[in-house]
Image (cartoon, rainbow, N blue to C red):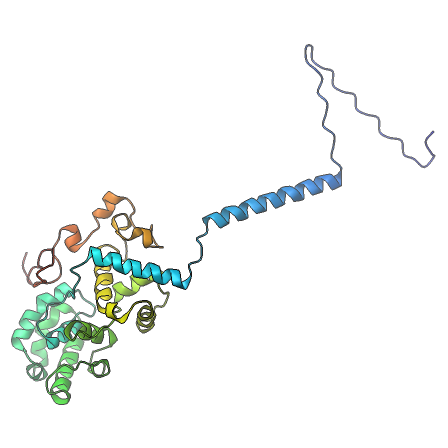
Length: 315
């Protein structure tokens, strides 16, 4: 007999009668509260583990500095094969013309500079001539390049400095060049690398954009970008690396819509997919000789595969 303190068990519910020809189903045993809690905890743990595993599969593996350097150098080698003819896209015949053209190239295209400088150098072929220029007359010549008043002031000022401090010659040292009016590190490196054969890294908007897309650096300041990239590549590569990267930025890896589907270094690019990935659509985005159009120079090098640019006013 049960003790007086025992609570009588609830009577079991009668099983539902089986339909004719079927075996009655036995109801599953009800889990106790602790068992249900344990099962819920286990299921939650399995779900969390599965989510973590999926995230781990999708998340890119962190790239070591050494791996980045190797990838960066491989990109440079690939670009050397794509653009064996890479060159400065400003027309010039001597260091003075390159210096002037580079100053004019700020906030405009190299094409517009190349279309403007023939008349400018015809009027002022030497630093002495340019230093003595009437500002209003020079402004009219260089007006197509934009910011013509500020540029005129810089050109007359740097020409006077060349005349008075360097005997009318463009100096071949960075520390001297950056003291000239309107000349910064970018302009100085262009002149040193292409007129004097002194290696230099030219960090313009194209160069800065691409090295950040390629995850070589996340720096925005051009001087810091230059310092970081200089540590990745041997000095002998600096000038040509600059040309190759700028060429690629102008022709394929555009600012607004990169032609990812037509990019020869897509497998090496961590930003692949930011632009058009369809090959046919991407090919329509290619510019200059890559797209079958004229380049920026009126007088390109002999090995340039594209068409010369038209003169100012030509259709």
